[in-house]
Image (cartoon, rainbow, N blue to C red; front, side, top):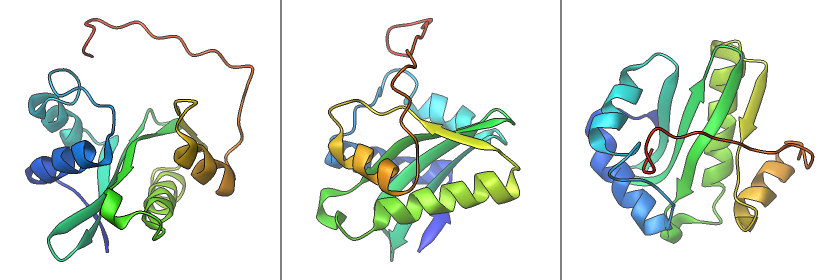
Length: 142
């Protein structure tokens, strides 16, 4: 069952990220204090696939009122190949498109992340090879 997660769920989210081998920044933008601030905002939400009290997959979703972003999609290794990532992505899309009125959804994916690339291609996302990604960080752990 997919449900919206709250800050109280953060220890489970963190444990899932670690188990899934997700690249995350526990002293930077993924520190509990930062995540608590993010979850309180109206344009950020975490969805989780829960079975009983077991968090099997998680997705962080943000938007700026015109474009939505899929972030931190991870499924616990014991629960992969069951369609959980696709269910989470579809739930995020539904909320962004239908509830939030967002017109464009994007995701940044490392080029060696073949499972995510496959998922996004399978679900109709278009790859833009001519786009270069730039960022400026206030701190290296941000």
